[in-house]
Structure formats: C-alpha cells, structure tokens
Image 1 (cartoon, one colour):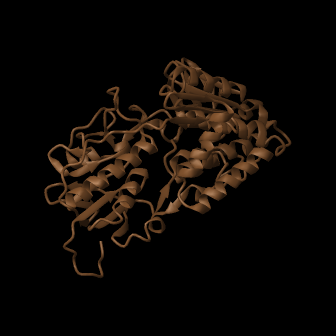
Image 2 (cartoon, one colour):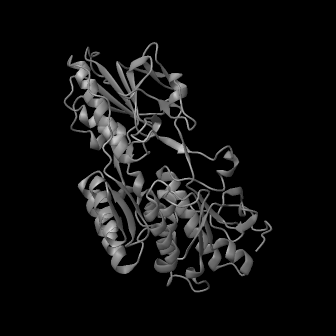
Amino acid sequence: MHFDKEPSTRPRVVIVGAGFGGLAAAKTLADADADITVIDRHNYHLFQPLLYQVATAGLSPADIAAPIRSILRKQCNTSVVLGRVTGIDSGTREVHLGDRRIPYDYLVLATGTRHAYFGRDDWEPFAPGLKKIEDALAIRRRILEAFELAESEPDPVRRRQFLNFVIVGGGPTGVEMAGAIAELAKKALTSDFRNIDSRTARIILVEAGPRVLAGFPERLSHAAAGYLERLGVEVLCGRPVSQCDDVGVIIADERIPARTVIWAAGVIASPAAKWLGAEKDRVGRVMVGSNLSVCGHPEVFVIGDTAHVPGPDGRPLPGVAAVAKQQGQYVARLIKGHIEGKVEAPTFEYRDFGSLATIGRKAAVAKLGKIELIGWPAWVVWSLAHVYFLMGTRNRMTVLITWIWAYITFQHGSRLITDSSVDPETSAVGTPATTPVQP
C-alpha cells in the first residue's frame, strides 16, 4: 500500500508469502493494471532447497537468500510489507496484520508449511526441523558444537553421544542432510581435531516407511540408499522413532544416544484454512478448485504447499518449487485476465519437469520424465538446476564458486559457530552434562 499517495481506484491484489509461488505471482503481475502488495514475515526470499547446505556449513545464508524489495524493485505497481498475517476477513476482504488491515480485491495465499511432529510437539526442542535460516543456523551450531564438545570430553560414553547424529525422515531433505553431515565428518573435518577422529562419527538416517525417497522410482530409491551407505550413513527403514528427548532417540525399542537429532519427517500447512474457514485435508492444506480458488470465494487463490491440488494420479501435487512457481504464474495470469475482462482461463495443469536429490559431492538421483539418472550425471543436472533457480547473478556465481572449491578441496567454507553457548558443563543442546546416558 502507498501511504503517501491518494487511494488508488485500481484493483488491489494482495499476495501473502514471498516464496517461490508468491514471487512468481508478483513478477507475472508486473505489467498488470493493478496495485500489488506482497506481505511476508521476513524481508528476504529464501531458496529452501539449499537450506540444508547452510545447516551443514557448506554455504552462508546470504548465498541462498535475496531481499524481497530488491527482487521487486523495478515493479512500479508493487509494494512490499514486512509483517505476520494473523487472520483474514473474507467478508470485508481484508488481511489482518495484528491491528493493521490491508484490503484486497484479489488475494493469493502462498504461505507454505511448517514442521509436523505427528502429535508429539514436545519433541521439537530436541529435534529441530529445517524451514528457515534461523533453523539452519541453529542446526549448524549444534553439529559443529558436537564435534567441539567431543574433542574436550574425556568420558568415551559421552564422547560417543556427541558424535552420534540422527536424521529422522528419509525424504529429499533427510537424504541430503545425512549425506552432507557424512561428508563433513568423514572428509572436511578429518584434519581439524587432535583428540578425536571425526571419521568415527555415526550418522543414522531413520525412515518409518519401507525405503528412502518414497516419491522416487524404486530403482532410484535403492541407488540413493546405496550411496548413503558408501558414505558411512546407517539407513534404517521401516523403523519409526518412538521417543525423542534430550539424550537421543528410541527406535524400535533401541536407545540411540545422540545430542544432535534433526527432524525431516513431515510438514503441516500454514493456518490459511483456519483464516478462511475453508475445507482442508489431513495436513492442513486448503482444498481448492480446478482454478486454485477457494470454494465460495472466487477472488481468493491458494497455491504452493498450502493448497491441496490433485495430480493426474489423484494424489496431491508434491510440495516442490516447480509446483509453486507454475501455480503462481497461472493465478497471476488468471487475475490479469479478470482485470482485463477476458474469458475464464483453462484449469491449472502441472507440467512435471522431474525430481532431483543429491547424496554428497558427486552422487545424486534424478527422474526427468521417463529418463532416470544415477550418480555423476544426476549430480551435474542437480547442480545446474539449483544454480539456475537461485535469485540473482551474485548468488549464482557465489554458490558455483563455493561448490567448485569444495569439490576440489573437500573443504566446507562456513564452519562458524555463531550465537554459541558452548560450555564444558553443557551439552550441544544446552542440557546439563550430568544427564545419565546409556552407551
């Protein structure tokens, strides 16, 4: 909204969320005869697929994020508002940011997801998830502190606890995180310590289902598990976590002591359905129509991870960047058509360009239509795709150079512990060192 100008008579389009979907919608509306307002609780757009590399000291936060205002600075019809949405009044057509009200004629909700602990929210302090830069920095601190504390720990039982790393969830995030921690421990840190051998770190990937990367073809799933095992990762499938606390996890009645547990097992949608009073699925995604609008509110659209959109096989479309971007572009074109008085656009159809997951510095799996790639070729495709979709030339060049350096030297360049509370009398998660541990 422009507070220094007279109120505009043009249609008002409000976009909540500046992720892949929200930004795609905003950029597609750059030439629309409308006033666009983009609302986000952060002032930056985050490239989430590489967030795990920040968490494992491979990249810095600035490498995968860009200011929203900078991205949209050339769009004269667009304003950016920093704030947290607390509700929506679909009757008066207003978005609530605390006491503030922002009116809309068209509303696009692209608010994403948050961690889901399947009714065990008490596990969150002990097993943080990975959705924000703050999450990545906190996990990076835990991982690096674990090695530092193990270095100065005389008790072999407690030292082993520090050198155990458990990742819960065998989807792309869990697989990539496990591979990155394994490379950090078994390659990058091998010469940094004198009292411990970082190569003895135990990295355990736990998946409740029968295999990792369940959304990929079985051949690629098995290949990914094989690459992980060659990196030294223990892959435990079909064994859900039954307990998680400050001294580790229990998996199938086996206690695994670990100070670093990372949650990558599930997500739940933002409160968008609650704000709208709309029908939702079991993970909170809003049930939308074929044009991504909400039933009874044709002016409200929900996209990305927040929307339940059936694919050709009847299952909901995956929560990946490509889906969100295509939906954002589609909704923006639909809104432009409404504004210009054009006929209704065709229903949304997702074009699947493939799925990618990397396991370490030169191994990945990729499904590109009917083509399945494993190993080095898949890793090249993964690398080029992620560099291409980063925001800004600076970020693309920085990440590319960092990756080349890491590939040649096996070194991770962001091994900094920030906002640290390392203390010989405390653990990597800040709990008393006197907590009893079972080997």
